[in-house]
Length: 120
Image (cartoon, rainbow, N blue to C red; front, side):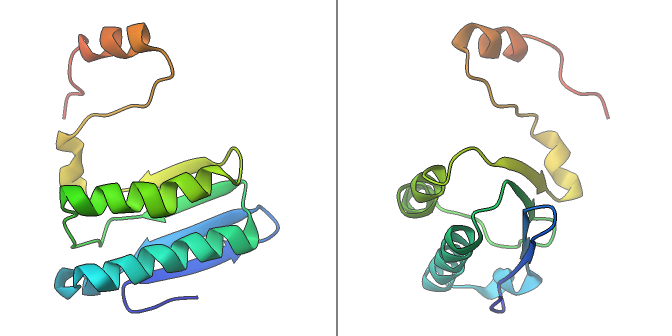
């Protein structure tokens, strides 16, 4: 399943959804990105995968703060209803400037923040 902004595939044997953002996102309007995100959400609910690999390496769209809120409320929260899903995200080379990690413990998160940055 795809449109010109996102390609979606499902590997049934390994229960993996592959979501690949396309370079055409450079000229996408917000309404087109919304449709892409809704397509992704529908695809996730159709297949109910255990794993997701999101390739953002060719994504050219910059999400505005209000758009991020919309994605959270209309896509992310619905995806959480599917249960535990392991995610991997491929990003552009220059995203190494952002060092992030998810935590479920505030103290551990704060401790990690105080460590050194990843060296290039």
